[in-house]
Image 1 (tube, rainbow, N blue to C red):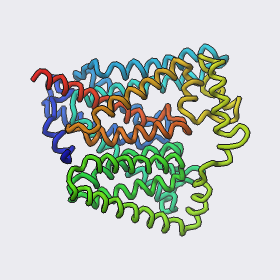
Image 2 (image 1 turned 90 degrees about the horizontal axis):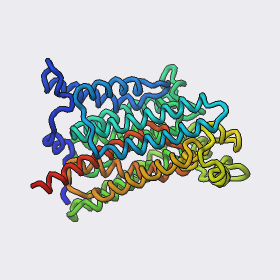
Image 3 (image 1 turned 135 degrees about the vertical axis):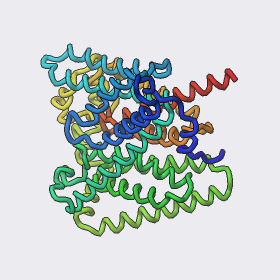
Image 4 (image 1 turned 180 degrees about the horizontal axis):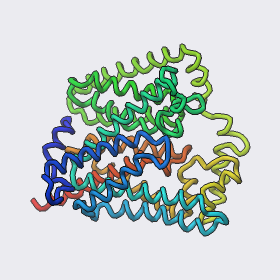
Length: 422
């Protein structure tokens, strides 16, 4: 299968503007404004150090404007809306099990809002495929900037940089290093995909951006982030290698993999020469930390929590698990059972399996959106694997990855329907 230039093919298949039916405004100007808004939404997702974050406020305004401007609902998006709503409904039902539900109300409301934004972005992509490229580009730029902030602050080169650190670890413009590092993985995987498959005229720029992201992930000292980026880069490489049809291309990919591996290993060895980095790295690199094993460690809490779920089918609320077992669940499936009950758990499981199934069927189709699908799918799968040891139910970028995949699924369904008509 031949390589695809995603940017050019998506641009050539651009649909009519999704907010073009606004009286008194030129359609092209409205479309450009919509493009800028979508890029800004992708960009603002990199800055959530305070809540409500600018991302939430901006997307609220966007949803109103886009629906007023003619954004239409498609049947291909409805399963996403239904399942995320059922997930939130499970959390609402859990409220009735609590003596003091006030904190849970806000938490479930945020879950519902994130699900609603996910549905909105899926609609935007389904109606205008070009917006897929625009959102990803905004995301990549924001990620590189927040990674640079975290890294420079960690090295002590940024006045007032302590606000970008936590527990002696880089967190960028995020509240937690363990969210900051996984956030950087999608843009890292996208830039790596570009290095592997696209023309070499921008290879140095992509390599520079990828290097900044990898440094940010390293200095976050997040085991989940480290594992996720290795999974994503390896998965993207495997997909690109499988898609290469000529021996020359496969040799090129092998050479790039060798150069990349040597560069990463060399950079890591240099970084470990600094005591500030090596001491934290040595501690964080242990596969099992003190709080993972032992009595009421992470894995024992998982076992006890799943037993509790059979006794409390409607959940116990957001904060109650830590009161019983000293720490939060740190497992998305257990978190779903505790906070959203069995209804939320089943909804999340169905959404996950449905997303994986739809993407797998079309992973190697020759479409303008195929490169985006491949990278998003690999990163989504990596998050699901990682979610066994971390809670991801409020990660904005996970909702964004999911909605972009569902937007692509809608595009593919429309394409298949058009092919049948022809």
